[in-house]
Length: 85
Image (tube, rainbow, N blue to C red; front, side):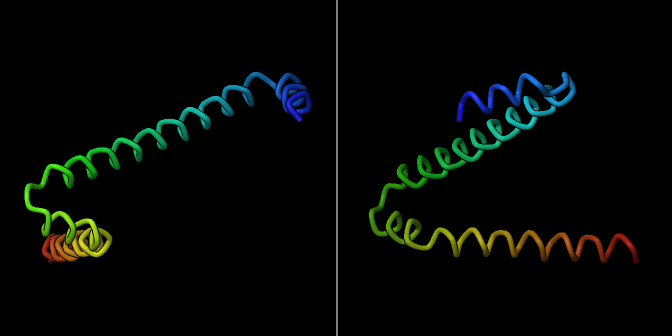
C-alpha cells in the first residue's frame, strides 16, 4: 500500500504535490487548533474551585456551549436588522 501511494505521489505534477501538501498542512493545523481549544476548556474547568460547580459544568457543557452560540446568533441577527433599517 505504501509503495502504491509513493508511486502515485511521484507521478503527480509539481502543482498537485504542492496542493496536496497545503491540504495536509491545513488539516494538521485544524487538528492542532481543536486540540488547543480542548486543552484550554479542560484547564479552565479544572481550575474551578468548588466541586459541585465543576461537576455541573462538566455534565452540561454541551448545553452551555449551545446556549452561548444561540445568544451570539440572536445578537448578530438583531445587529444586522438594525444595520439595514
